[in-house]
Amino acid sequence: MAQKHAFAKNVQIAGIGLFVLALGIFTWSLTASQFVLNEQALREALNNDMHWTHVSKHVAAMKGQTWPNSFAFISALDAALKLAQEDIRRYVEQEMGLSPTDGDYWNAILQDYKRKEVRFPVAKASSTGLLPGNTWLFFALSIGLGILGALMYLLPRLRELAGIKNNGIWQHPLTARGWLGMALGAWLIGFYLLLYFYPEHLVNWVIMVDPLSEALSGHPASQWFLYGFLYTLAILVMGVRMLIRYRHNRYQIIRTLSVMFFQTAFAFLIPEILVRLNKPWFDFKNIWPLDYDFFFEQNLNQLLSSGTLGIFMLGWGIALALVGVPLFTFLFGKRWYCSWVCGCGGLAETMGDPFRQLSSKKLRAWRVERWLIHGVLVFAVVMTALVLYTWFTGESRVLGLDSYQVRKWYGLYIGSWFAGVVGTGFYPLMGNRVWCRFGCPLAAWLGLVQRFRSRFRITTNGGQCISCGNCSTYCEMGIDVRWYAQRGQDVVRASCVGCGICAAVCPRGVLRLENASADVSRRATELRVLRICPGEPVRMEA
Image 1: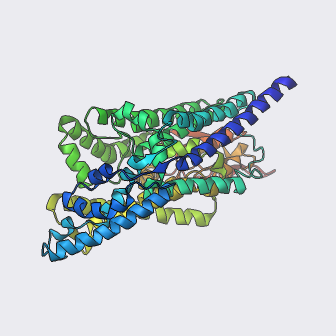
Image 2: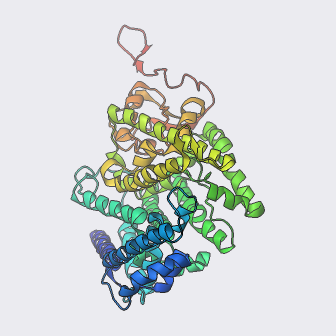
Image 3: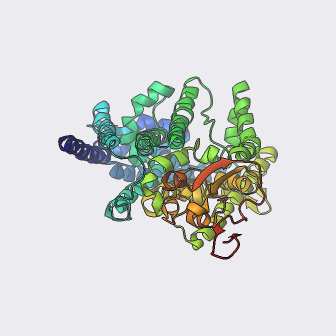
């Protein structure tokens, strides 16, 4: 027995070593190439002959040069494009006689957004050397080896008892905001910053998954394909961890398999296959207002011009947001989406599970949560109203607000910074549901229905509660479940995602996830704790 235990421990240690090695190779691979300007790619990215006439003069000095990394290459390319940008502006003003007040002026010049847009495709086409010539080798040594190492660490845990064991989570450097957690958080934050704002520095990773993208969609990979692939991979691998850890709980097994399936099939494979069939990329499980750009004109125009399937997709999205959300939330609570279907929730429940105890249970955090999440919902509704007004009328300004500027603000501050950089990068710092708890507008919409018109609740048997605190500790949404359990009150909170972990870790079976139509209006107010004193009648008491 001791030998088997020692062997399993050695396998886990080897798995950790392989994973760390793979992560190191994966990170280093960003530097495993050189850059030689691909003029054809630059010309295609500009897609403007007049712009190319001026740009070609300034990039001529870059011919024949080799840059050791993407930062040096992008710096040289951007300097040349800025010079060309000024030449084009002078030409447009002096030779064409246009001024900034003319409608054609902004279409004629090389705008800043276009100069930034060309960086990624040009950097990708200009990458040469070690990695581009050995794509599958780097894929195997980084991603493949990482999967192997993770499984070698996880599978031996089948020998351990199932469930949470409180074995050092508040002392471990990864799960207690220690140095390892800080390092992981910094890596994740850095990844999201590059992904959203500087994707030209991730081109080696994108090249690594090019063959997979070509096989699925018939197109080269973009930074968003890379993101979708890594996102899905994280849910699948860490989903194995969830299945092992909670294998004693049927609800957790089915819920984990559900998020793994929906992410892999509906968020990753089906959209890519649709593109291969010349149909719009579409995630059938993504719902407005989480899918905040669903009503943007480019998406509406694409769906309406894609025939019967496109119109079905449009109707499907509207029906889910306006009919599906209130109906399913009334029947099952917000768990039907947040804990069973949603990709954000899927990543939080799998990759983020080791950090769930870090969510703040303080009253102040709850107050901030309510203001923030409902503020984001209002922001999303106002933005969508402005976008639809612009789509129907062609006018962008309403009551002093510019719809294009408002959607830009939302995409930058909510879609990029909040949902991505903070929402995932802060897992090791603030718990695994930062975005779901404080920012997701769909979670706010689902929560409003759950709080007032849903049959779902977590029932409590306060007479058996021993106040161990497991339920509150592991509540990822910052709910002090023990406070309710001690009073025998049903837990009815708009923020509850119905993950069921509080019930899974309760040693006394005090908590149950239930759906019932009876006493919906008063279920969170009645106290059901019995107090028995000698010589006194039995009474209900808080």
